[in-house]
Structure formats: structure tokens, C-alpha cells
Image (cartoon, helix red, strand yellow):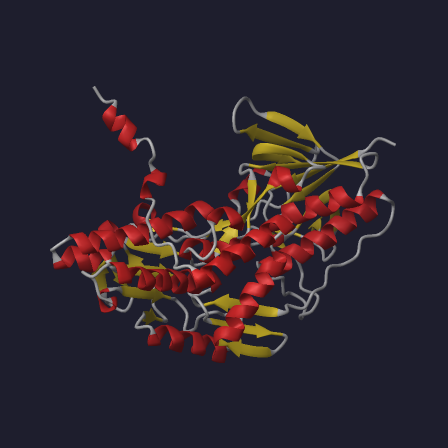
Length: 437
């Protein structure tokens, strides 16, 4: 029997966990697993706020693909097209001409990108919070703004530098806002020119609540805690413009800011537009509960999908509901999908994915958090501890677990690092200036 070729498109939560499980359960005589991703690592996104806040090293929030997927073939490049009718994918390596990869089974897991709106000025002045690069940039930028404010004698420049705007009140927005404010507050001890009251932290949320994944009382608690830290919380408010860094809100307020962070949702990767897979009205790949791609009533043989880019029916809810785009579902879907692929290759029937959402945990800064797990609600230090414990248990590889725990342990005894390394973002600038004739 010739070994089947399984192509995994994307190495996020779904791609990495699925490839890892497939490589462990299938022998080399049964299957070859090929993983394609532009990045040489998987980013554990729940740790982005902690990496940005300086609680853990940014390197420890990513998992090297080649170290973890030693029994897989890793191709560094981008899938530019999938023709499932021919069962081939076109891959653009990071260097060199495109190549075609034929497959027997394909796991479509390119994930999601930031869902933006046509808001004037957002493209020029906004920054997302989905990648490790964005997290590092935001950390350096916030610290640089403290330097700007401390060095200037112009009150308008200072006010603009110390105004930080976060758009979107979901988990990404709340955790990013809380961790950044916590870090900046710690850093101010080294800036005698500045006071905590000089900073303005603004959250803009289009709905009437934050953290929609938890009950309203937990969302209300979160807002109360942020208000106690003198943050400016704007619910039922939209960002209408940020041209030249001048933020204009739907409630009529207007102010200048050099920091505009967009965390208002995600959408499926645009890579899916270059495939022939069926999609729903939200541009997600349509799937059965077994994680098989489905076109109407017809199963698309050899095609599988899960995670942010897939419309997977949620069997724990009424018909018509789909699994939320969360890491909790993505990891479990990846494992079920890998087991189903193994079953199909070995001539057995696939099993439907069914998981009742266990709840959610969120950090609101160091020693502060909110959690709702299996109906049990916690706040403050216990919720923060649960947040850390849960995500430490979920990040792949023993190596990364140990490094994260070491980072946290050192943080108990050493002060937080609050130095900006802005030169990382344009490292050739100084050399280019020195070598200019």
C-alpha cells in the first residue's frame, strides 16, 4: 500500500495540533504529513498580552515547527491556491519559484486575520494584535510614547503621546488594554516627569457590553475594575475616523492619539478565496460535525477543516449554531479531525466533534483576572491564577511550558523589564545613515 499524503495548510492551533497527532498515530508506511506555513513557528495567541506586557519572553509564546514536528515535512512558504478537484496545492516558498504539491487529504487551517472596517485613517495609523510581531511592536511603541512624553515640554504633544486607544471589547482587546496599562503604570516609577493621571487609556466598544463570552455580570465586573484604574470605557460607541491620528467617536468626542489598537474581531483568512471549497455567508469553509468539508449534502472527499476559518456545527446547542472561533475549540477540533483522518485511512467511520464550551478565563493585568468555568465564577487573584494555569497547560511542548513557568517565577523576584527596543523594527536605519555618501 502506498502511503497517503496529508497536506496541512497553516500551522496555527489547528494545523500544529493536527499534524502532531497525525504524525504520532500514523506510521511512515501509512501516511506522509506535509505542513506549509509562512512562519517557522506557531504563535500561542492567548500569551500575546503577557508577552507584550513583559511577563514572559516573546520567544516563549511561540513554538518552533521543526522542533515539534520532527516526523513531518515542514515547508516554509504560503499556499497561494488549492485545486481540490485535482487534489493539488500551489505553494510559494519564501525563496524561489512556486511548486505544486499533490495530496490525498488536505487540512485547511489558514486561520483568521483582523476584521477591519473602512474607517478613514485606520489603515495608516492602526495596529492589530494577532501576531507576535504586533505584540512586540505595541510594547516598544507604548514605552517609546512614555519617553516622548517625558522629553517634551509641549502639553499637547505629551497629551497625544499618553493617549492610548483600544477598539474592541472582546478578550483580545480587554487583555491587551489591561496588560499594557499595567506595564505602563509600572514603568512610570522611572519617569519622575510623568504622573499616572497623565495617561489616558480608552476602550471603544460598539456594543453595550464587554467580554460577550461570559455572563453580563462578569462583563460588568470587568468594566468596574477598569474604571477603578481610571480607564475611559466607551460602550455603545464606534470609531468613525482616525485621520492624522485624530480619533473621532460616534458619541461626538474627538482627541489626538498616536496609539490606536484594533482588536474588533476576526475574519477567515483571504487565502480561502483562492480555493474551490464551499463557503458560507461569512466566508467560512462549510463543514460537517466530523470536520469533513461539505458542499450542500455532499461530503467533499479528502478535505477537512477546523478552527477560525471553518463553520463547524455546535452539537451542544440548537441546530444552526456553530462553534465559536476560540483556541479551546480549535485544539479539540484538531485532535478529533486527526483521529477522523486516521480512521478514514484505516477504513473506519469518522466521529462527530462535540464539546460543550467549558468557559473562559481572562487576565486583567498582573494578579487580576476574571473567569467563568463550568458555571463557576471567579474574580481577582484566583481568576488570574486559573488563567495562567490553564494556558500553561495548553501551550504545546514541555520545553515551552518550562520556559513560561521560569519567566513567571523570575517575575516574582525581579522587577518587570520596561525598556523599549524600538530599533528592532528598523534595524538598518542607523547603518544606512552611516553608509550614505
